Length: 379
Image (cartoon, rainbow, N blue to C red; front, side, top):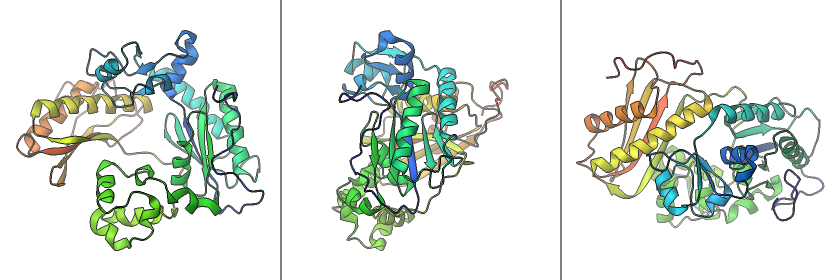
């Protein structure tokens, strides 16, 4: 329960909906609240109210997949090493992920979405975009529809979700994160610029630490700051992404929900606070990334054979190196071993400072190839 409000009920948004608003498009972004941890707390009542960290043994090199909101108060977040999470919250409850259970709950949630619209783009187990411009209930008000969907999810799963409603997909995603947990934030078409004016640039999907650093160097801290900049000023610093950012800062996006979208690569990356030349530290970082990627693969029931390593040096030179295996890696240790070999043989690691490491698997498929041995010609 939040602020005395029953979970799953409609809480009014930051941006209220006028009686009559013309919506060119109506998008809803749904994001489940602390999904893995919430499922565990639902199924194990003794965990309610406790800091739950899903990710593995803190004595190992595991990373946090998800943690409860009680754990987040201690500064714990996803992709953090579980050993660090243990130091921040010694009394936390550490659990191994149960992806089979999470997948089953996810399928139930996605089926709920399809009772309202056939235009559903699933992004992960706990996140999806819905185009409800035309919907199966024939409701004009997307805010009312979002409230019904949240109530439906809670009635079936006893889990809360946060929703964002907006005329553009990226705006709906930003909005869904505004009032977590169990929130509903609406950005009406007539108040898009008001919503964006003081929004930090980092809130725009796709803006990471490096891009944020460049924008701050241009004294561009909010979306409103970007309004006075020429597109060429951004493209000169950020390339094609600069033009996209120019439009998004004004709430402009032509992207549509793709119900048949399927990602071809799953990856994660980390930008370091200080450039790293020490090889053991780089290999340790790759271990964290490898475990995170492998957990995400299991989470989505996906498999791939091409390992992709991304390296950005201190001077912002960026390279990618890849290796295609005869069969998908069966555990994160194999993924880590290959990534370390690529780092050693195909990069200047150890000789040239590195500011960012990324690791991914491309050529994803849904076919279960786990029965194929990967112990053969990995190299």
